[in-house]
Amino acid sequence: MSFPNEFELADTTSKRMRGLMFRINFEKPLLFIMPKESRESSAIHSFFVFFPFDAVFLNSKGVVVDVRERIRPFSLRITPKKPAKYIVEMKAGEAARSGIKVGSKLLNSAYI
Image 1 (cartoon, rainbow, N blue to C red):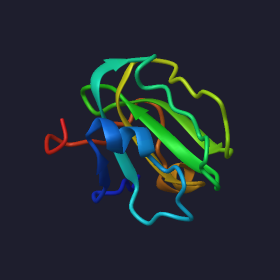
Image 2 (image 1 turned 90 degrees about the horizontal axis):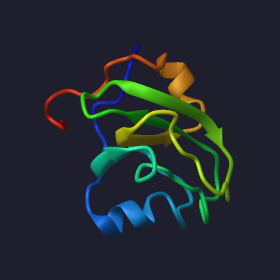
Image 3 (image 1 turned 120 degrees about the vertical axis):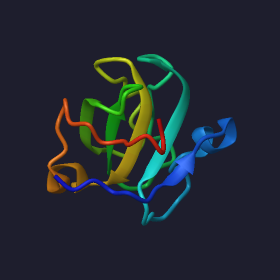
Image 4 (image 1 turned 60 degrees about the horizontal axis):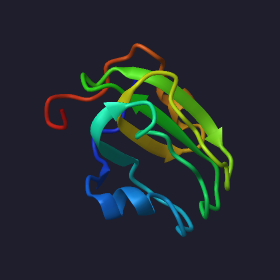
């Protein structure tokens, strides 16, 4: 399994609100650091996102709790199956190529 070690951080309210909206493309995966671990506050959407992408939801220990692949543009609400503290949005197909699965520990102490 190969997981990115460089991210663009979305660690403020304004960065989390903007996310991938209005972008044409992106290179580094976007790491959202949520204020608290929960299902509801880690729900995402893809309004004004013009390309498909993958979303990996992780708990406060950096363990994957849900993987959503090829999220389509303008999807209304994507809520993880379990509470999440971190969300990584990456290029469509990257989660499968990297071998990311529920139960994998992906984030190290630099982010947790």
